Image 1 (spheres, rainbow over the protein chains, first blue to last red):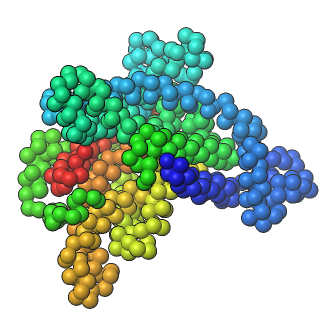
Image 2: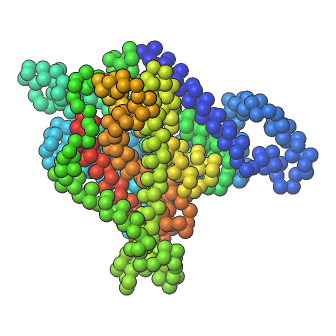
Image 3: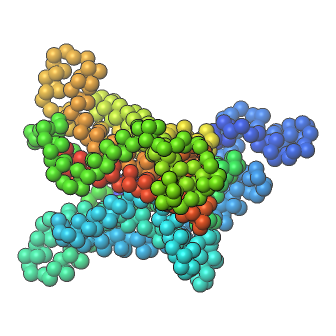
Length: 313
Length: 291
């Protein structure tokens, strides 16, 4: 267990280093000079040179990389070219809404996906199975923005039932709840298909296992066999696979945030790239990548904790 | 790679009758037909399209579907939707094709090398693959768009980079099985060079795995590419591309929903057709891969 965790952690180190290096190089290839930007349009060459020295931009590249890492450790990700707001401050206000949206989507889509997958696996080959699998294939084929636009058109515009732009407030207020419903349906909607499919596979695996046969042989009710003996064991791989799909969820979140003007990190990153706000783009991409790596690592270690069979691996 | 490697089960050189088996499933036959039609429409777009994709007539702006001479209506610039869709399909499919060929080709090469020079290269290549896999495609897309600027080039590159590790894993798995078969040893004994051995004996026997994965991946790549274009990071207006068209149409959603919705429906049909076909191919070519 400990060995497994350590192994994964060691593997994550070069990945994180790679992210930071790419982030650093990103600022080297872009056609703006941070010193000129920081100094403002009216600065004299002397001032720019002073800022240049202050930022360490006159030093060799590897020294600059060290300085960059040092600033990063202190939480200094630079400031926006557009409005000079610190990147860390913008990230601080957008991470919450992104996590909120992701959790709200998973909150309904995971249980529903697991339910559908279990039904499909249990009645393998039946009409129910075929219908659920057809829905699942359609679900992974539909563009996220399509789902979002359709919901906006019908629920938001035609029927005027729910708001469809921005975040109404914290989740414990009515406005907050109302404004997250459509984005959460959109993002969760594309997640049901993969979850149902993975659950079905896992349930099929477990249903043919010896311990399930034993459970049936000793006369347990089907309900007990399925719920206690099959589904419980199937859940371990399903939860891991869901964890590994977080990247897919993140991609959906970026699009969903853009469609619904949801004030999250994804929308911030896209806006920064489109407006050539390089420090902001760099900061958001680094933070999203790091978050993703940490989640993957956590899922991996959790999996080992849940499933004793792979501890030695 | 556990049980299957020990048996003398034949490893899928595409057996005769694959097409017959494929066509037996109605859904598979239909998706194959659809894919052929879509590709034909994309190739023949300049011949099929009633107008030029950049021809606009503002007096026709936002005409709804079913208007005189405009079965699918016109977009906000008064351009014929049918023309835009045909050319959009062309650009979208081409982007996907380029990404699958580039990324898949590089990935397959890495996979073959890892399997063939297992002792020296497997470790390093698979570590590299693990590292690449730890970046979700969307982040690759954002990072590349940030460095090279939004555009078709960035999207194709991002989609290729995101395809490399996946293809490498599939090909390595498939090639490792083939590597343990006697005939590889026999071919080696004839004094063949490594390059020839890989090309003539190893690669052909992994083709079905490559083909199945490429088909499935094509659907995903189209979906992802259209999402990046929708975000404004891919094809730039006025270039017709399905995701970019949906994005432009979004601004007119409440006045003329068809401008955004019709390209979305086409993306959905394309991706669905490739996904269903990929699943069916997998079942027909290599039942062991079935999930």
